[in-house]
Length: 383
Image (cartoon, rainbow, N blue to C red; front, side):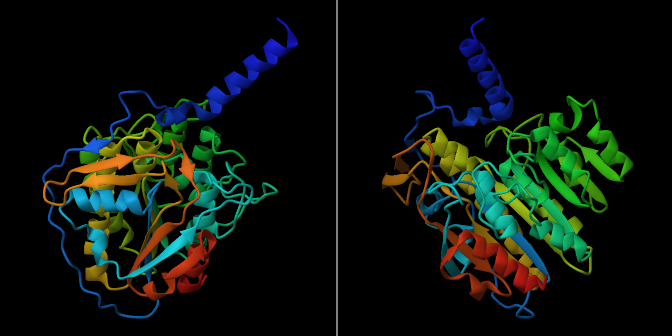
């Protein structure tokens, strides 16, 4: 074999190993569905805006991966003109650029939101010199707070990973899974089971989690029954499926995690991700965007139910970036029909919205850097 052919083969193998989970970015003719025909809307409730203090005891960070204003308005149209997001009165915008690119990826975008520093595309909570950066989740653990992660992707994927792991490459899924064992995270729910069990180093991280006191469960019904203790809900071998096929239930996972975390008097921090709004943008699929946006909004509804009753919880809803250059070419508020158009099958560089509800929400208005969101949370929690 010629040297050039060998090098190409090695490179292709490496890319396959690093990005084998990234097939959701592949676009086929049948994926490109531009119109969502409409469906039965769910009821949206209005929640009180009365809170106990200026600073929160708990923070719920919710990231709609790839979610721009068009994705939100598509969901709003499909649901008859209203979303649970209507409850958020403080609204701003975030600039999403990474340290090395006008268009960020989810790793650099996630790191900016988790640690308050810009870094290069592909970096998981490390700086531009690949030195680990402490995240809000780790700071919360140091203060004795409970912590959690929930995601409709693999829990080892870029956005959730950026809160708990420190790796130079987002594709290092097995190393990211091993980083979970270096923390005391209380609850995590998402896919990625095989990164804990089918590993090159032969470690059985699921077994190690059990030894550390975690309930390691794979069935959503069993996960939803957990009321206390440490929980590792690994709901798929790699990524979870799409709505409505998905066995992992994001609103129910949100409710379950919040109930467990709320038992700590010192408070909690949790990040909840609607991952597949992004994947729908990569596939240029309007219907997929709408279904994932509505699923994410219903998870926001569960967070609002908790926060309105608790009155000491700050909810931040934002995105790491926009995906697809998604635009609305038509729609009908009565039928819920949405017609979309796309300028790209990748991420774009536009600002994304920031919504805030609860104590300290007034700090999240105007135009800000994505890193400012983390910095403001850190200040409000007194870290």
